[in-house]
Structures are given as C-alpha cells and as structure tokens.
Figure (cartoon, rainbow, N blue to C red):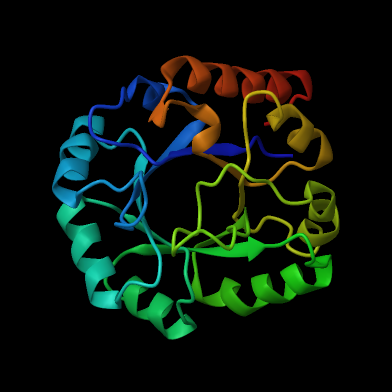
Length: 227
C-alpha cells in the first residue's frame, strides 16, 4: 500500500505555511468561490504560492464558474490544479486541461447514495480528469458553497468503491479531523486526504491542529509500514 498524500485546503492570506515542508503534504488549496468564507483573492493567493517556491502544488477550488474564469484565475495565481466542485461537464474539464492545468473533480456523496451510485459517478468523470475527490454533500443551506462544511459521509462505503479503481488518484474530503483520520485510514487507505475545517480554530488554519493531523497520519503510515 502507498502512504496517502495530504492536501490542506482553504488557506487565507496570512496563514502560516510552515506545514508545507512536511513530507506528507503534497498540495494546498485556495478557494475561489466568492460566497465562501474561505475565499481568497487570486492576487493574494499568488503571494503565498510564490512563497512556497514549488514545495507543494497549489490548487484553485471552483464551483460552477466559467471555464474562462477558472483558467484566468489559475494562471494569475499560479495554481497548477483546478478543483471543480459544481456541475461542470466533461467538456469543461477537457477544455481546462488543454490550457496546461490539471483538473480534479469533486463528487458529492450524500447519506442516501449507494456504493454503486458513487462508482458510476467516478466512471463518468475519470477519463476527463487527473484526480477525483469524494466529498460529503453540502447542506441545503449551502448557498452555492459546496465544500468545507466539516461533514463526513459513510466511509464504510469506501472499500466497496475503491476496489474497482486500484491505483486511481481518488481523494477523500469532508469532516476529516485529527481525532478521526486514523479511523478513516483503518477503513481504507485512499490516494489522498483533503482537510480544511478540521484543522481550523475560529475559521483560520491552526498550525497546532495541522501538526496533530499530520502526526496522526504519519503514525498510521509507520505503524502499518506503508511505503
């Protein structure tokens, strides 16, 4: 088994980026949905991306925005990945990729979804994307903000789902925290873990919580001798 990668998402101007030096961290995310409380202007994000000096990959998070806007904001900020959280089409994804960007597509998983429904969604998007992200469905009151709600879905569906896609870059998001990430890893080892609200205090990223989250993942990796 391969050790999971980690993405810290929802960075805001002024957040401490020291965690980016941790060997498990491969990506950081910047929300480009203006309705989100984690929204960051692409010019502010650019300053942070440049400060990282390519230690990790920078991801711009979008939802139901035009292809032109996604491409422009990614190029302006220096994002190498566009993470799509809305109802974007396969054609949208392919057009974005033609502009030299990777595309991740988020798939919302609700409490009523079966493993077969999630598998079908993965099959639909996987040929037109570079990675997929399974995230808990947003509440009805989300007002267009599709991620970062701190809710998880039924992780016990994951072994049934992921066995059909061995080696595929499928990330898990939604409700991950320092106190439950070991439980997720005991259920299944995904390609990557995407955490946002679970490592915050008062709506800002907490260096202490991030450190504990990474320590819990690292401990699991070493205990189970993941490569």
